[in-house]
Image (cartoon, rainbow over all chains, first blue to last red):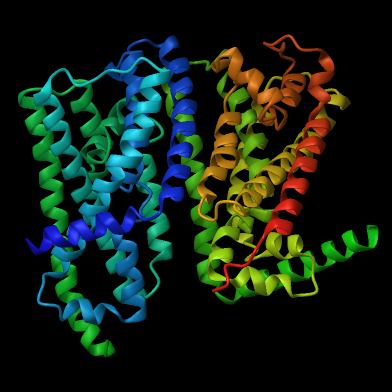
Length: 265
Length: 271
């Protein structure tokens, strides 16, 4: 219940910046259009590249734009705030709250993601649907699987961002690590080029890494590329990474707890 | 008028130099951030190469030709971003009230905003774009004439001027909506992404809009058509290929007007 309250407050907090949201939607839409035309040019030449047809590819471009903020592919979200609190020492207050630190920030991030999904996720997709011929989930069960997959994507992304934020316990400034993480995430999530286009073994590698859970997995479920049993396997893949990363976060925070005491908070 | 412009440029130089010295205080951080930018933009080009693993031409252009477009656009954006990229923080400055402090200093406002937090680390992006551009020049099979060779620096100068105008317009827009800074990204970074690809992949209406309304096509597309010896898909007169200065001037005038009326209109938040 408490976590629900944290998530709801976080949702409301993000919803105060309407002009910023509108500007962001505009930018996402412009980029969506550009990427669509690039994909159309690619798939015109090679109509079944990566097992997608051109409709799949165009839909993928818009799903990518929808996931940028929702899954925080470029970083950001509540973990940025935590990193700042670690630097200023305010994290001491978080540590003596009678709430699990990880759960507190995860709930906040899920609230943020819900807001971004409803605004910066749905709005550009509507723009895309008006301008291009898109593919939609085959039935309600696919849509439901997609939603579950997006939630798992946010958790995986949170896990990675949390690990980055926690480096601030040791480095104080996590900007360098954050930039590096953003580089990896932008490329390996398949935001620019779908992972299915990667040649040979690089494709197998990229689809096994946690970043594949950000966009490729939810997109494949939406497009019906993975369905039935394989869709459940895809969700298990996401859940596996989510669990692994959250455990790693918990371990890192446990170590950091001592560190904070040494530093005096 | 000339005196004031010179004074503005000198002030810009002094302020930019100050920020360079600031960034050099944290040398390790500077190196990491510059390298980071180099890598980020590098992966961007890697993504294009991945697409070329499945196709051998994009909109009728080879990888080397796309690399030329990519390098040209990236270099122009990188230079503009270096010159006045942080002007996009205007909205934040207005919100925090620090813009008011700038107004009472005896230095032209534009010079102050343009040089604010001058980030030499942007050389990362510039270097990456230059590497791609040089690589494309090496592998491209172009019949080099003096005119073609001179068009390369010409492209960079006016392309940069166009992006500088877009950055200024985006900032001026924030006098009206203080948190709309992201909308400007659609024109600057979005324009860069657009111009990285041959415009033949976009529908004709889009290319017309990019020529006559939002003149991104003059950043690198028209000069590149001349350098690469390609026909213009819109069939515009040959003079279009050399019209970048006209576009840069028109857009620059618009940006200057928007900036001035923004400053004139500005009322402090009072906080």
